[in-house]
Image 1: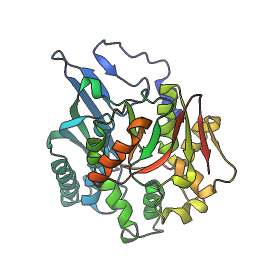
Image 2: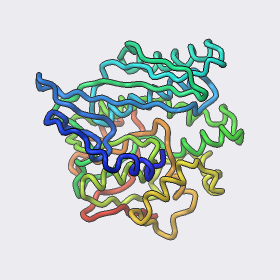
Image 3: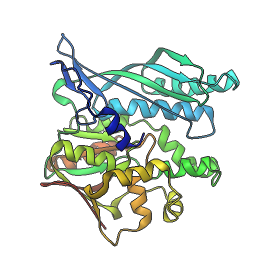
Length: 325
């Protein structure tokens, strides 16, 4: 949904306060964190969307990975999940079985079960998960934990939204964006596990609001400024020609309009990279604010786990996001 429209929908709705609610929607975090009577902290999320690829199996796996990512972005350990299914009855049940198989296999890879769910008939297919997990109370990652001096890292390349839109418009084949599909199906679990003991306080996963949209949520919640180096961004190369021609998803354009003057971009940053930074991702990587004195050990831990990452910027005092070349 257009973030500006979401603001209008939520305006005036006062949430009921609960002292056990550690993280709600105040700072647009990835999942809710709730302290149980035992002292344990429950983390829970829900996410679903329409198909982004042609393969039903891959669609199910991508949707499941995307849903699980919210738990990992809070430094949580997933426990179990529930399916959310809106499947048109006009389409063969075998298709929807493949979607569910993809989701179940990805949940299995994450070490959890899908314990049930809910299914309705709908004119447009939608699939995703409700995921429940636990997090250590003193190890929770949230949007308000970034501090000046931290280093920003990103654990997947950008450009997935542009490529899935190109696929939808038959400008590329599924084979031509096979690398993007692999990235979307990749769990952020290993990145989270590698970083869980590195003194990190703030992280998010890059999804529909794009890199700059999700970065702005952390910067605003933490009362800090971000400086992002466009030349350091990892980008799926096949997305660049479409970005150069402004062939980007509608959500990407809405992200740019919504952020307005909060983001300033140097004149020498190419139009293609500007669109890439606003691009509405599906199952993107983790954006992590790493304490500077832990960066070397964090990098070693990521490399030991075989996790891709790129250092893309810095956390500074001030407000707003500055993109430099």
